[in-house]
Image (cartoon, rainbow, N blue to C red; front, side):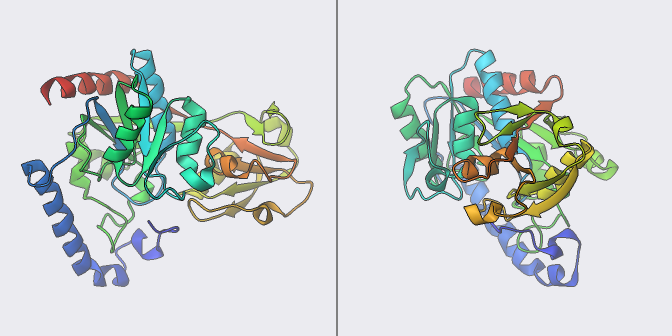
Length: 337
């Protein structure tokens, strides 16, 4: 996955047009692979517990991690004991591993470690999602449902429910890799069980998804948590009249910066590549001025962050009916699988 989206992905530019033949090859190969799994020529691994996959069709961040956190809460409220499997992108695990409660994000990846801390449920990582899920179930046999984080295109793991998170701003020119940012075409969204639309959809996009089960979602936060002051908390008022430095190594850092600006903060943006491996030198600037990080970045910076460094956690707020729809699909999918 590229750390920064190429500029030519945003519009049907000449360079993107020149890459369209390669996109055609990509579409042919990825479509053939999916067909072979559907026909049973390539065998998908069916786990002894139901599997709920969360993913997207585009390269880049769309808000999947807060959605996984929300789903874990919904599953627990419905009486399930969930576990999570993840690729562990950005970590150093070469096989599969279960993330310990005090897991190091440099080893296991930032998102898996963050999820393990947020939801306090078992998390396993590995490029081989079925093997990671088996390791999780071996270590935690009480788990009765698996949530696969960012596994929509990992067809070797059989799934009972698919949830796609869509941020229209990440879809760019709507072309497949490498001419555009899409891993799969827009039509794929009408094959999933639920589409969670992060942000307002354009009229054209809303029409295209007219026959799909679409639920609106937004990410919200109101409280800042100090990284080095024993969990001290404050609201946006604490930063009024001061410059704040917003540091983000996520798929769409501009969304984070804009969110802070809407809260009335005077923001100096510091974007970094997605999954950036932060060091102390990355935060060694503007002494005495507060620095605000996303949760995904804060989990990597706690050990060396300056004293006036804050995390801004957000939670997913998803339209009424989404949880019931997904849970019904989960129960029905397991019955008919």
